[in-house]
Length: 113
Length: 112
Image 1 (cartoon, rainbow over the protein chains, first blue to last red):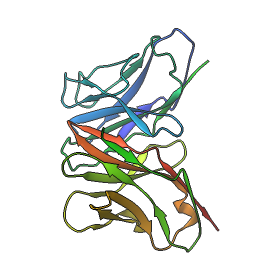
Image 2: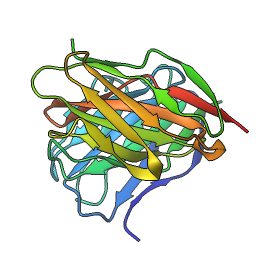
Image 3: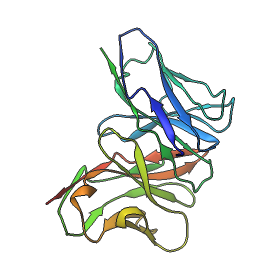
Image 4: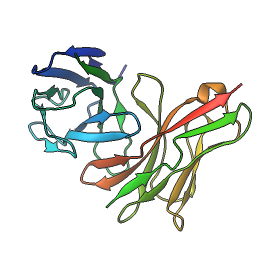
């Protein structure tokens, strides 16, 4: 089945540690996105990538980093510089056209302990 | 600034009654609008979209949405609500440059 797979589903991080969230898609989509979801705030764009080896900052990129070495993969690293990393993180992809809906992964819930 | 507003944090409706979840937008140029649904601890699922053409858009699971350009609204509707429709609903607008902005979400409760 085609889709987006995020792992792990739950992740616990100690303060000061970097953690990497995985996102893999087999939909052959060019564009991939990372969103952060907090209660009552909807989804906010962290980073996005239009093609391999290219990515752009979204609205809340500080404290995060990404890579896009393969079309299928778009991992997100939450660094120790992110002051409030506890949130639900969603990865998405689409073909990149203006009228195309996004396909979302099941999300990773990150908690700082 | 471009924005999407969902004025209701929560909508309550009885099963079998019609439901409406409201959305208004402020985007430059032609609006490309979407509705998504999210179940607990899951990703978002696409319901429907408006690109151009007929102002009444039909989507998945019996949902439809009405685009109103003069009121800059894109309200989600369903003629007869089901308990299983209870979820978090997001309105979204494409703003250009591969970016989509989302409303804050509206939680729908359907009571049996």
